[in-house]
Image 1 (cartoon, rainbow, N blue to C red):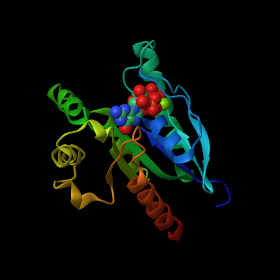
Image 2 (tube, rainbow, N blue to C red):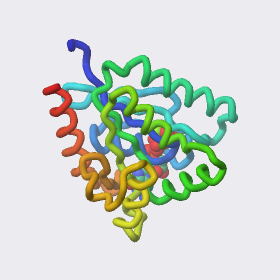
Image 3 (cartoon, rainbow, N blue to C red):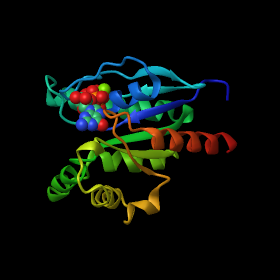
Length: 192
Ligand SMILES: Nc1nc2c(ncn2[C@@H]2O[C@H](COP(=O)(O)OP(=O)(O)OP(=O)(O)O)[C@@H](O)[C@H]2O)c(=O)[nH]1
Ligand SMILES: [Mg+2]
């Protein structure tokens, strides 16, 4: 393959995708307190590939429901169109609210977007790492990570899934394990 491979960062709005990429690359991507900051895929160089910062899905301040739906469609199309080039997807979740949101959706008999996306990436044969961000705000770290794993179809304890789940704090710059895992996955993919 000659074209540069990419790592996509996907997830709900406001989970900290752009902050994480800033920490990883030093690129000054826009971040913000309100959901809906990143509106279009942004590419930044990372090693010999690039990282794509995707818009978030779900509620965005200042965007209509139709607008939110359109952005989600764009994300899905982007992934489909670029699947051959995507070396890895990092699904970023907010560790403090993920389980609650998933349960709320499940209570309405709906499949939460994150879960849908996780399965969609697998169907396209794209490797996925789940970055449980904002872990600095979590008290019961193991319990919370067990809950996240379980809701994504990985039976607890979460430590059985160290190749998939990694706790991070973009704000505190606590991203060493994520870096290592990305490296490992990219190398494995290269040998394929
Ligand atoms: N406590 C805490 N806050 C964080 C962390 N990472 C990001 N944040 C905050 O979360 C908010 C959203 O961060 P962004 O990086 O803009 O989130 P995003 O996922 O790119 O959001 P969209 O572009 O709107 O989809 C900001 O206020 C960040 O400072 C973290 O690890 N811990
Ligand atoms: Mg963003």
